[in-house]
Length: 438
Ligand code: ADP
Image (cartoon, rainbow, N blue to C red; front, side):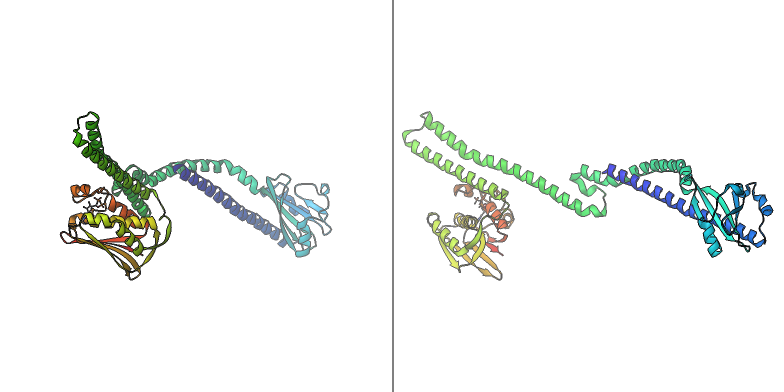
């Protein structure tokens, strides 16, 4: 970037210097031309006003004073006198533009390039009272030769300005880049870096992304640590009990009990792994799944039937209420969502308690509500229960087959369905979780 800025600045400087020099030279040269022609005109008019213009009178110009060439031409174009060449050596001037125009209009001025392009000839011709034409001429450097003659000076100036510009552009780019480089070096403390106003939204975005990345890395690390930890307990149990059986250390009566414990731990492992896989699937998936028209009431009804046995085991009754409402979503996701909410409502309920699932419409939104008469959740835990592996009562969660991932999966599904979730809970009274679909 620095190099690019420097190159661009040098290019602009060179262009500016060259165009200024060339424009100034052309403007001055125009003035110079005008000045020469004006001088010639004054001379010519002075001679014309003198009356008769004769050879002797013109003789004083022969010395080449003022670099002036005087030519007297008669009405037919024949040169009568020329201060530089013998009149006889010059051919007819009848076709010279300045002669033709002076005969016609009384006066004429013409600029011609000489044989060498380095010189220009300036002519001013005036018709005299006797019909002759008096022509004054002067030679001067052409604009090209002026340009060539000052080329070394221009080159010198360009080189000096270039050097100056190189130093200045380095200082400028350094000062321009400093805050950006500082930002790159201090990504963790962007608030301490003094930057440009225009970059503030950019800094905010980078800062946010940076924080998100850090958060996500920490979350992943925590998650991996948690998963490993969760897997360890059932695996240790499986390993321990199977070793006892293997070594013949289990009494006859214990074998079945140990096998049942192994079975239970294996099931727990499977549930944990399934939930972990599901969570990472939802994490990776960018789409909202296979979206179709899904009947919330229908799904709630099926789910309640599926959980009947579990509810009976917990001495909890289940019912569905409300009217059939449909939402556009992935059916499997909605099934998982309802299942996880109802499963929790049963597991964290009290014996003799009740779970009511309601579907309906509220304004423009469709909703699904799972209300239980269970143990409830204290205020301080309410924010956190949607986090992975967050449990209010770890032993109760484990003893009822919880993984600590159910509500994290719910949260993911809610986000994928563009829905929102509301929690209302009172310890000892019960919990009400409502998912609103827009
Ligand atoms: P778990 O597998 O432990 O149930 P969840 O992610 O489903 O994990 O829930 C997280 C925690 O939130 C639970 O451990 C429990 O403490 C609390 N919780 C969830 N649902 C309810 C509920 N209906 N009533 C009381 N507590 C609940």
